[in-house]
Image 1 (cartoon, rainbow, N blue to C red):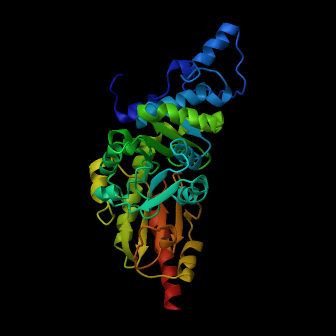
Image 2 (image 1 turned 120 degrees about the horizontal axis):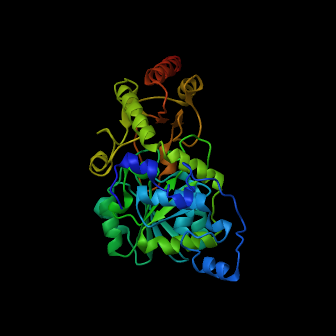
Image 3 (image 1 turned 90 degrees about the vertical axis):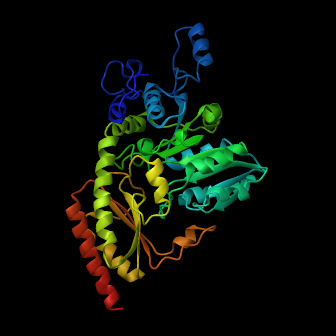
Length: 396
């Protein structure tokens, strides 16, 4: 394949004429039944059903095949499975590689629904989960058991933003033939190359930066040659598929991913550095800043950052946080992130989401997603928020 720069690959990936039919964008092909002209054609399609051939709607149409091909070109691996949301991608990837009696290792800073899945669905199946310190490094050896089948990573971690030493963890897991999975959503397909660092399956909540406009739910799991056949077939057997309309919007969002990520990164770093200088802030947890755990791994392994980071306040209570957040003009309060808009969420008890590690923070945490607005407007919004925050603290 011709070697192309990243921005060029973002624009051209998955745009083979067999998918686009000479249009700039791949058309939306909605289908359940595929009709064949002859018995021979039907047998040929059935035989070739695993190789991007029109066979049955749940196997995909050209709309799906184009997006899957683009994801593999950008993120790596050999195949990409699609799901109706990121959580479905995580749960089905794990389910594809565990059985009753197995044991998995799950990073303690995982996305909350991932933890809930382990503690309920997997537990009911007889699969045991051990949560581990995100910064454990070589110490992961001590937690591996003969029945450990999956090591799951999320880097940076959800909310607390620790960056893991992925190559070290993957190397140790592979010594015991353990499948290594990574929630790679924060980096998107372009800022961390999972298969160059030992990952077997990389999961994306395409809902976030790939779609980029907060209007689609979609998940992907991209796998290497070792895991692709099983991931593809098990996901199919569990009924996983995605709407072609949603996949079309994800493909369209992918085309501007590079420029959006650079702007998110620039805006977020400006706001993060401003926050780090505020007297109300104990420290900022942004992977690109030295104050974040695992910053050294970010510098070594990542190509860039984005708009999502957290900060720890040095004091605060529920009343003060409520006054701050309720008056925001440019920061919305909502779950998810990765769209063009800025968001803010408060977390007063991060330890309720952790079992292997407990954080002794000076005060409550705020998680910010910095969107594409003017940063001076965002900073002024935060400044006024801190005024409300301080006014309540002064009177309590």
